[in-house]
Length: 125
Image (cartoon, rainbow, N blue to C red):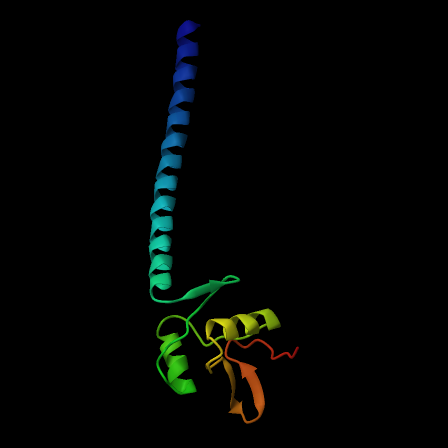
C-alpha cells in the first residue's frame, strides 16, 4: 500500500512538474514578445511619434503634398489620420502646434464626395 501511494504521489509530482515547465516556457515566450513590443514602442517614441487614445500620431517637418504624405505614412505601416471626433481634432491641432497638416480626407474617387482613407464615414460635429 505504501508503495502504491508513493507511485501515485510521484505521478502527481511529475504531472505538476510538467505543467510548471510548460508555464515557464509560455511565460518565457511572452516575456520575449513583450520585450520586442517594448523595443518597438521605444523606437516609435524616439522617432517622434505621439500616443493618444489607442493610436500613434506623427507630425513630419517635411513639406509634401497629400499624395506624398500618404505614401510616407503607408511606407511606415501607417496612414493619414482619420479624425473621428472633436477631441481627436483638438489633439491633432495641439500636436501640430496649429500648423497645417494633411489629414486622411479625400475626394479622389468622386469629386466633392469626401471620404476618409480608412473607409469610415465622414461626420460633422
